[in-house]
Length: 560
Image (tube, rainbow, N blue to C red; front, side, top):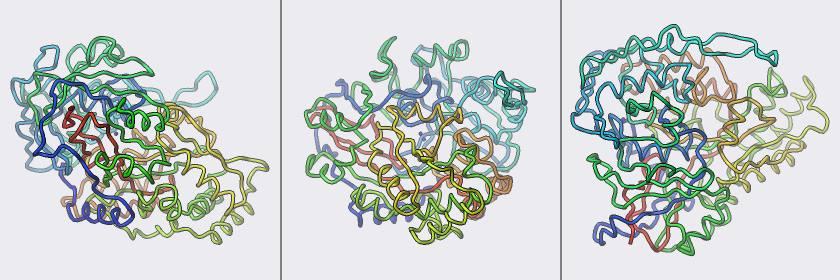
């Protein structure tokens, strides 16, 4: 999908704004005065097939992420408000923001009995960063000195005649990551970054037992972690059906499970899951069919939640599409953005449970700015959009008969808004546009990674840690882990690095805001709206809530 830069004021403003449009804190049964429920009963929850085997640093999508974060515990975690909480870290110290000493708690174990030590982290991080291991979140380690050597690539011509980057590391481990003793890690960054420890609760930084590195593929099918849950048994992952987790009785961290386990049931459409909740055949879902957004509070009067979180929705434009390159492409990007009526879609399709975007981040993150220069391109203006489209056609005509496809996953409740966007483009630009449905989000991710999507794709970002950089760097920095569309702008990258090197949060946020000015000129993706989490649950469970980044607090759900 993941310490402590969450702004309480901004978070409250975001929630208040959503409340004005029908969103905010929802009802939640099972408060502190209620019975604890059955601590051994398994709960069932909505999900879908993860994209990859469950290696922490190779899991950067929501359905795999929700499993990994229950199986593993890192140096830190984040409480419900986004504040950093030490977990396996006794201390994380620095005197200059560049050199860090991390002390790991003694006596904790993986579920196979192996002790979690400093080596469990050092080996896992080096494995994640090494380009030959092709881990999706490898770029999260780019701040550590020596990352360039282990992540190096070279150009080779493939059988198809295309030039491709292939792994070519000049070192196997990062020089800035040193195992000092069994419980001490020394980290040297390539430049001072005062907020670097904020990232350490994200799943990419989780420790691994020794056997994970011996056979990563097999381990990913049946991972052994150290978190509040463990895999139910060998074969607990039934592909395209479910993943079954049970409580880890030896876990002693901050997220002690109040139920006996979580079985994630896989759906390719949220509508059947909604029906299963109504029939008490599924316990909780955090993905609602769009037509239920008008009725879920009455369908589940005491069993619903509606809560703003640090997440956004975007329409992403692959950099390789010829019609969207050069000056004509830039005008087309602007035209499409201004042709989308975000206000109408959020009110009509989402029943006011979303807020139109004004930037590339989220209102609940410290440093959010709703008036970044250039952001006017997000305002609906059909006449200007049509004029911009005509200017682009005068430079380079739109191909006759071409249909602009908008890829979306049917498991995420996206069809209705995709259809609305397509209609906006038809009515305001006079072009043919239509949705391109996929049953699984993982299918879209694989095509995005292979750079073979024929058109735009729905996307979005759920914060890994509470920082403006997390909405910008991993998604849009050159070569970043989630930069599937291949955007690259050296001026943007430079501002990100200057922001990371800033001595204060305010200075860093100023640089990140300047970086967004470049994004509004280039429009590598189109910000659509800020997200809120709608959740419903059955009569069988209580104490349902979500955290600062929208993740359900599965460990806190109690079964009746």
